[in-house]
Length: 304
Image 1: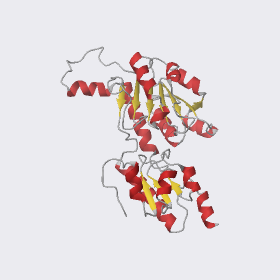
Image 2: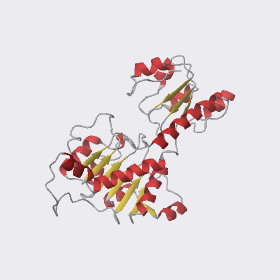
Image 3: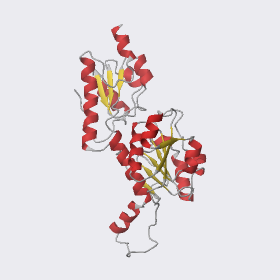
Image 4: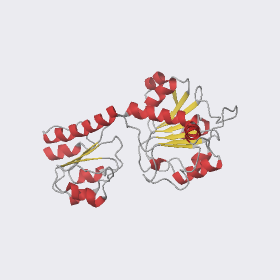
């Protein structure tokens, strides 16, 4: 067994070298596992991704190579929904700007016009992507008496809408009418740059956008320009288009809260994610279906 010893992502060459002669790969979202990696490491039979998102895995290439690929859904939903709401609150109430005033010793005392932000209670929240995390955010919003609408490629069952008190709307209407927009879609060809310059211009000037999904869902260069020009009021980001790099000018803006991709970063959740990845590997080599296989058809092919 080889354990990557560094607190950084391996380069592609290092990843390939680490996989040679191995039967399984347990990887993170920072590792791109595609046909090139699988061809260079033909002994690998299962790839277990310690993440719910799997845009770093070429699942089709895995299927073609007879390699099972898996992820870790379910366990990080509430933890990520917590962080999304925390980002929404921090951006709306300008908490990080206040923190910087205190740490730099530049606070001159209380002022009635100082750091005026946006009310969260009773505001309109638009959720783009209404899977487990999006629904978790809707539950949290109910505690603040927010008016919640959502958009998704597949409409939720009526009983879910009634339970959570949400309404389904077109994306254009959601962007136009919401005070806060929170993104919870997977990264797919149709969601890359879903939020572009035109989408940002369609939002309220007082609106805040939050992204805890995947960075490329937002055109980051367009976002910088929108924040700089006052097209929208603010943004709370946990993910970025070219991680770990930021778009030019983003770090200098005061009306954005920037976090280092910590949506699932609680001790309990990260531990459970690692456990699920290990369970997938152990199940596979015990001749059982991995609990969260992304391409279970490979197992059928192997049995045939």
